[in-house]
Image 1 (cartoon, rainbow, N blue to C red):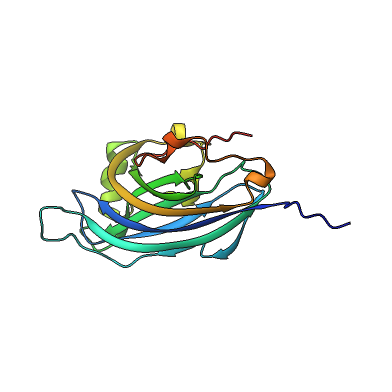
Image 2: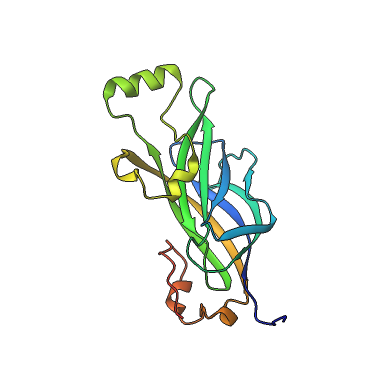
Length: 204
């Protein structure tokens, strides 16, 4: 017998990777990908992308503007493994090699509406001066084999990193059928404040 109760809810994400602030670097581009739990699946849109190369403006604000669009819809049966977006920024070094300038990740906002998030970026560091010199000489800086590790906790505590720059994203979030499945995302108004995101919490 058919039932009208939904078995999944939808999370619709639109937005932009707006800009970056890297005081020490210029002419950068970014890549993004989404990381999510086993119960989640994309139904439309792009799971990853790469932006154009942008340079700093000549004005007093030394931001690198991309305004790179994001558009994806997910479906899931429960909130565990709520999607994160991983952003990787790249640029050319002195020898013209593409090297990573920053990694960062943030959870997709779970409250419907417009949001802005600023992600602090970091880069892996060599563990010795010799490795630093060798990597500089060879044009091979430390990088993650899989950038998705940025969104995971396993092994991160043994990785030496250095903070470097910020990336600003904007989101427009729409959810469907979450309340019908018993998830209330309207009661945590404090989470709507822009800035650095916290971990999602759910009330039943």
